Image (tube, rainbow, N blue to C red):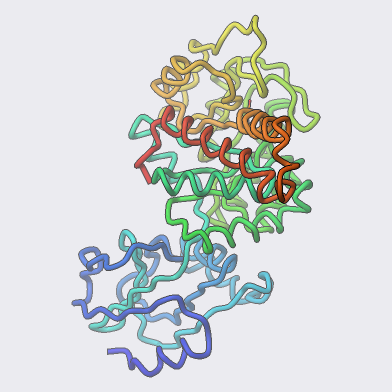
Length: 414
Ligand code: 13P
């Protein structure tokens, strides 16, 4: 048994969400009862059952994500962590369980645990961002898609997270570099999202993902604590796209993050970048997919923003050819606004596992806000209070996200 007093002493000194001790025969982690829902910091069991290790349990906002990344990358890359424990934000705090006989750390479904001799300590740490890798692999296998909804501010983020939780759906929060800058920087975004995961008690898988990142933007998001990034190298010659993507594959692997790459630019205009909407070359897609990225955006005639009346539709021929060359790779459909439902369903059938939606939430937010003001509601009582003024737009985003999650088939898949 671990002396309970030591645990208690640690919990008194540091902040622990919950530690409950469950007697369990060593090695029976997988069958241990899940007593309470929750998500913890450790996602894998990199230690063999007999490794004597010092176990550092981190339960911070951001630190836990970084720690989990180190853990999932294995013991060897756990070591560098020692050098910079204070590099994390002020929210960083941790407990040190300095028992030399911590035998194993494991993630057992909903719980994380440390086994010490005959005792299993089940840790209920706190919600954390996850990489998009696992949720997209599940989506690909289950023939549905996870929505990426871009965020612009607190209302957007809250509306999307609450809808995902209500519908028990995994979700990806997309942040373009422009939106990141608008929200004062990526660190603000990470702080806001992590805070909301905790305060809103979000338990569904949530990835915080850079949308259409530059190489430099990707590095900033790694540093800031995002759990996923997209490197958009589609405007580079393919060899350069391959080189830069390859470097990022290495970097994200060290941090347990997921990486999206792009081949064949998406049409339309986003943050001042105009793509011509060319269809991707399936062989180039294979070259990028083989680098070890976690998801691939291939241009198939899709466009950011509303589709023009003369839009010829998605090129399913290209999508099928890309899918054939890239096999199990989850494919990403950008420009989710305004694509007819039957095309969305066909795209999912052909291997699309992530669909990005941005403009549609902006349009529904704007329409609801316009209606409120045009009806003069801001002039009635304290209708000018931003919490009232922005409420219809907030509800409109929720409705749009719900509609999309239902269409994409991700409801109940958390
Ligand atoms: P829409 O703005 O067309 O929904 O596209 C979003 C997107 O693809 C973000 O990357």
